[in-house]
Image (cartoon, rainbow, N blue to C red; front, side):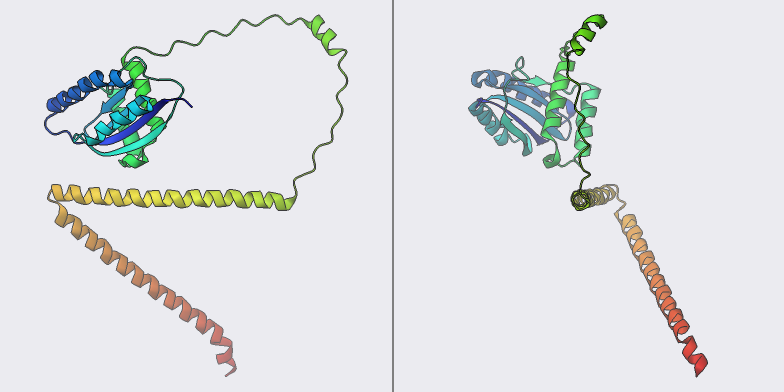
Amino acid sequence: MSDLYRLVYASKNLLNGSEPEARAAVETILDASRRNNPRVGVTGALMFNDGAFAQVLEGPQKGVEDTFERIQRDLRHGDVTVLECRPVTERSFSEWSMAFVGRSTGGQAAWSRLATESGFDLRRLDGDEVFSMLHGLVLEEEGMAAPPAAPPPAPRALDTARLREEIAPLPRPQVVSAPAPEPVPARIAGDAAAIAILKAALAEERTRTTGLRSELDALRVALAEAEGRLDHLREQRDLWRYRSRVLATALCEDADGDDAAQEDEALAPARAVA
């Protein structure tokens, strides 16, 4: 098995101070990485924004593990989350002891898109997507775009005479009867399995949506509190609760009325005989 490993992680950005101070701190991180990584055979790439870091480390297993252990002890990182760790057959950042990407607007937009899709939950980031984003940005920002594909070979002229000679000796194909149709119970079983898979996927999506709604509600409350609108938010909540109670009461009364009408209709023949 290859001793070459790749580790992709994300962490919360705990850098304090102004933007220039944060960038100076990142340059310090990069300088240390570019001094230490070649000693242990580690290469990779790093990017950050105001909220989080994303980094790829690749190299011998021990070198990657030792480097990652130092990162976990670094107080500038919080909630360090491993997104991918597996052996690989070749390096993707062989030219960079530690490339720094994400300076461009497009790079920041790509990182923000991944963060948004994960609901700003580091555990739900996709390691392959983060790796592909960093690799693409390194090639783009270093001006090392992949070489263009070689042009397809020119088509050769069709030699019809030779084609006839090759086809003539071939035996005639045997006629094979079409396979019998799949039994109905098997098709039903397949449909049932497909439905079960769809139901499980739907349940998972509902759970995810519920979680996102809870996070959005918490963010709205925090924003309202920060802007001094918490009392207004509470008034709106109480108003919706009152409207919900009124609606529920009206629905119950309508249901009781329908039941009474159905009962009168059922008893009408008996009353007429009496």
